[in-house]
Image (cartoon, rainbow, N blue to C red; front, side, top):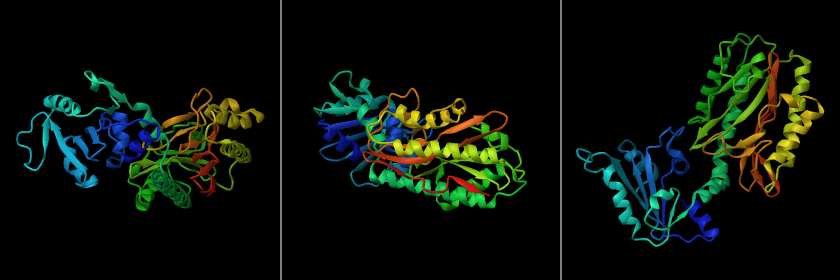
Length: 365
């Protein structure tokens, strides 16, 4: 909440009270509670008195004690929201669901300048819509947020490198994925950013392949797209594993993709149109007449979710801003043959980028 307060102050919005109750905003504000966030976040709303600093959480009874445990008691007030407060534990403060709206309307009348991310809450009063401000702070990562994402990225890369050292002929995609996820847990992953992708041979041509019982014969490339969750934030990295006897044409294709990745990263700078960065990578592929096999955008934002704004694609209207953490992941997919994707995670600033995923892009096995 401090980050939101600072941003509102910086853009000249002076408020007394803030109410957050949209799912997307709540998922961001309480990201450390869930790995991953559930479809229905069991936090009904968060309210903040800017002058006293008191933060009120209105949550499901199921989350009451965990919220108090995670956020503590100092400057925090937690209320359970349920259909009936009867028979709840005596130390659990509670509002019944059908009375909460009236309670809140009475509470809002005490303040002059109210900021909300859900305008219908203010049918009978004037409020300031802060949805755009929340989108901005979610994109522009703080130093602390970047450090968490970097730690998640380090665990991701280390897990891939260790798993690569254990890959041997006869292992299935599912077995490799299992090894990878176990190693990540041992290294500190609290959860996973998405369903792990391990693709062998022809399956590398399927961008969102689901690990199968396909066996690694010892001569095919392996594509691993993997991410973990730590303290509510995620990573997203794709690496290529290549045996020494892999087809030479594949090695050449990997080199082209890696050049597209590197050229795009060099071009990135705060203030640039995201579609222009996509164009840089796509131009490299065009010179080799393989651009038609690049069937997705160059990248996307990463944070609490693995797919956030901005979008780096041909049709994107987004501009890069300081603090964006985005993927750069050029790829080509030749159906029935093979595919290549190399993906890095980078931090954007006015001077360029900081590559958060510093490990090897191609790993020999």
